[in-house]
Amino acid sequence: MEIMKHLIFVLVGSFMTYLSQPLVVVDPTYPELQKEAFAILVNKCNDCHKKEKPQAVFTSENMDDYARKINRQVFVFKRMPQGKDIKLTKEEKQTLKSWIKAVKRK
Ligand code: HEC
Image (cartoon, rainbow, N blue to C red; front, side, top):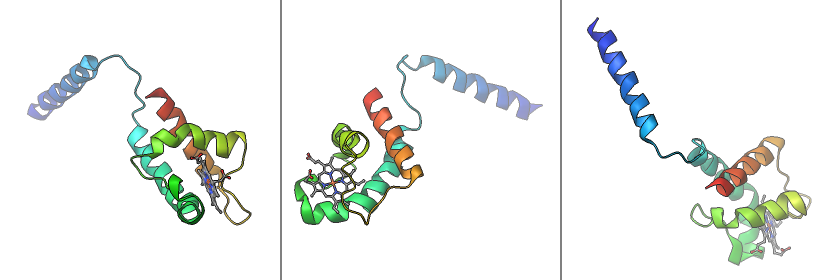
């Protein structure tokens, strides 16, 4: 019985915390998405950028500022990743898209 009481307290407690959040739509998965997107940028983009476009090497700090440009280069103009050797998988594209959306909502 004690355990039930405890559980109910915890549930009510989390619900109250939930209610007290300001009503802005924040994507709860944002930090996770950013982490996954960063891993893609490191694996598929940064090696080449370090050599050929050193002003635009992505870091976890600057990547959100690049989100719009990345959207344009990868999804609108389809110029990136440059060259024939490096391709993004379907999953990687989906992750980048979701991350870009989440950045726009911030
Ligand atoms: C094989 C080389 C290469 C790869 C791989 C590559 N890029 Fe690039 N990228 C370049 C070069 C060179 C430029 C600068 C010249 C240009 O815009 O074509 C550039 C420019 C850019 C720019 C514009 C930067 C600015 O400040 O205007 C963005 C955004 C970009 N790349 C995103 C990406 C992303 C995202 C990936 C990975 C998914 C990627 N690139 C992979 C070579 C590469």
